[in-house]
Image (cartoon, rainbow, N blue to C red; front, side):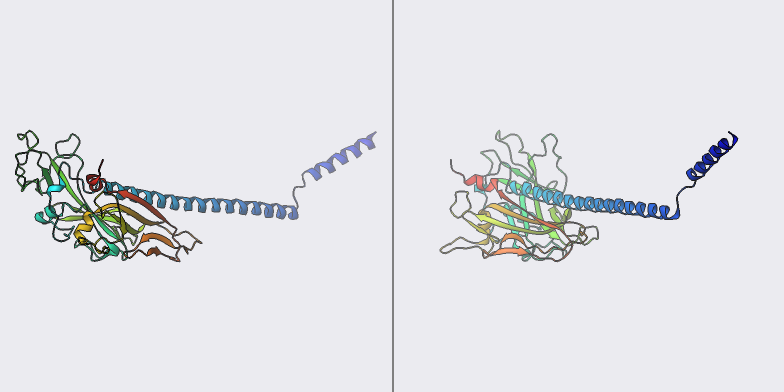
Amino acid sequence: MCDAMKTLTSRRKQRSRHAMRGMSLVELMIAITLGMMILAGVIGIFSATSSSRSEIERTSRQIENGRYAMEMLTDDLKLAGFHGELNMGLVATPAALPDPCSTTVTDWSSAVPLHLQGYDNGGTPPSCIGSSLKSNTDIIAVRRVRGCTTVTPGCATAATGSPYIQVSQCATDPSTTPFVLGLYGTATYSLRKKDCATAAPLREYLVRTYFISTDNGAGQSIPTLKRREMTGSTTVEVPLVEGIEYLQFVYGIDNTGDGLPDAYTADPGTYTYAGCTNCTPVNNWTNVMTVQVYLLARNIDTSPGYTDTKTYNLGIDAVGNAVSVGPFNDGYRRHVYASVVRIANAAGRRDTP
């Protein structure tokens, strides 16, 4: 009995020693190797996810910038030529194209019939467009007045030194003076409403010249959509949207007076056709009824491992040939945004029921 008990106790001790023996060196090395393989996989997945998220953020920003730039441009173009109650039939066209950057009051008045004025591939740019202008990109100037008057609730009141237009609605006001355009505080605004007793309201006069700059206005070499705004005594440069690399326009010109475009050109300043006797730059620009807008937007940052080998179509040039840019062979992703805008204030005056 004692021998049997001793044998049983000895076996229990042996099993206990085996149970507490732990892992061998080989087993530990295998476990470490497996752990490192799993960790490498997790790190790889995390890296790929992080890279994808960064790329999505870059692309999303480019899409947002492109759409915002297009919306801003087309919204302003739709209002080109809006001058409140002014009857444009009473306004004489200028003898020559004026400078959109001019701060001379008499130049503003003569330029009122020119709702748009553009410069194909930069051309000879307006005087206020600086050296940062990106080459081979178009410039466009939009002339109009603000939609609300200075007495409209919620609209800014008249500010001294800013340009405003007053339009006569009184039948007994001098027909030779259908409007007054000048600086508030200097000009004499004496025109009246239909009752011929109350002073006609004022609307702020706006001249906005859009162009592509090679910098963002903050010292970084990022192509940026900018505009020059006429403030009265000067113009100010306003950066609008980063990453807009090219800007091109194609204009629809009305040759028959019905408000519908009959021909398309990238440069109304040089447009003509056989037998045309009034295809002057001034007349052509007053006959622009639609604008095709082409924007090329790119990412702000490069995409690792990506090379842009694409070619992008941006409408036509002054002689009707297709305009394309690229391949750029760099790491930026790009996209073309295009839209067609009807210039309602110019075309609408020619519509017939």
